[in-house]
Length: 171
Image 1 (cartoon, helix red, strand yellow):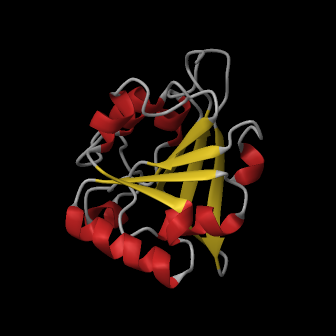
Image 2 (spheres, rainbow, N blue to C red):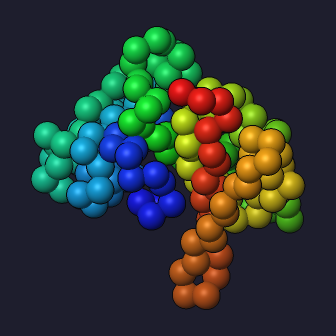
């Protein structure tokens, strides 16, 4: 991911931090000067903080106990000139596995469009199911721009993908 994001972006904001796995990896990578992790469930953020301590990066992550939509929309919380957003949203439960093509418009509890609308002031990396509809992802690109999609595979099998979406508006 680091190679796909503009080097002037020194802060990464993990808007669905969960138990902290991605935030911990970002903090350990050395690529980011600042890691901000947002999680709305206080018990889950407590687990995430514990996990960060176990991996020795507790002091490298700023934990925010808030709804990511509220936090990102507040003026001044994020400097979009120096920040990028990483989103590994809930996909709506294990039912996504049965879909031949995963519909990002019906992803629960948030659609890809809702997430993109919140994040469009900066580059955004969306971690999505491997069967996500590439046509829906392409529609998230600003006019005249492209979305880079990377498949993540283990032992020759696709497990997930990340879509790197350019900023829609200048920050």
